[in-house]
Image 1 (spheres, helix red, strand yellow):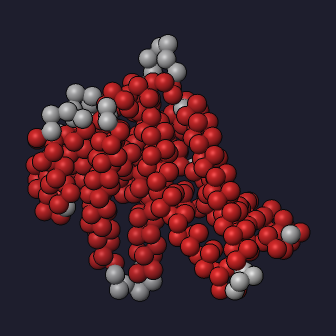
Image 2 (image 1 turned 45 degrees about the vertical axis):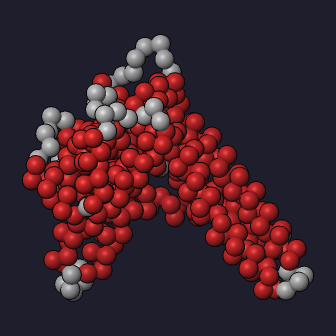
Amino acid sequence: MALYLGETVSIVFKTLPFLILRAAVYLLFGVLLVIYFGIIYLVGRAVSEISPNAEVIAWGLGLLVSFPLTRLAREYILYLVKAGHVAVISALATQGKLPEGMGQIAYGKKLVTENFKNSSVLFLVDRMVHGVIRVLTRLMMGLTDFLSGVPGIDGLRKIMHAILYFSFTYIDEAILARKFIHPEETAWKSAHQGLILYAQIWRSILLTALFTGLVALISLPIFLVLTIGPALGAAALEPQKKWLFITMGIIAGFVLKAVLVDPFTMTQMIVVYLKETAGLQPNPEWEQKIEAASSKFVQIKKNALTIPSA
């Protein structure tokens, strides 16, 4: 088992154009969120003259609405950018270079459109793969249940579960990466084969998940301290806009993590997955185990056998 840190860092730097694109997209997304919360703040202040409770209700409704908006943006904007990034990472991890005469972003777009002629297929496959991974994640977390009840260990086990749950989000992209290096497979077949191989290398996945999870969890508070500090200073000068400044600081912290840390953790998981599964063949025993645990996996297998193309 290895983490391939040197290769991961090298690929991260080589994909600088995609990092810049992701930074621009996340920055735009962050600015739109700030504008959105600014409007909610102003609406809340306006209705506060009617009743103090009306202000709280307006802010509460605004926060509730922001969650589906965020998810929608991720699925229909951010995920497409990420998919192109994954395509380039896959080529660099397996071939060491990209074809001559084509920029990274154009190359990533080309691979995404060739492998997923209908973007809805990309989203549907990703959602179903994510559902299977959640089931397998719970099974992997169950490997630590024998520590339950041991004095001084139970708390550590819960921390490990939190880290693993947080980091397993990057496995979706690792499964997606397989499609780009196996263009002869349909999206469903690639997902089916990729999930079985993922289960077969669970030890390497656990090690990588712990490492990437720690990096992500440690970095987020650091970025929040760096961004909320100035926000609190601005809030001291403008007390009436305190919560607006604090919200801006929190959003900025998450944007910095998304731009500077997430590409590294995603690349790390993809590289480990591709390296550790190279040359492996899906094990029928693991296939049966996953079928017994996840109905979504059964559906993916059915689609792999019946749908002729992506």
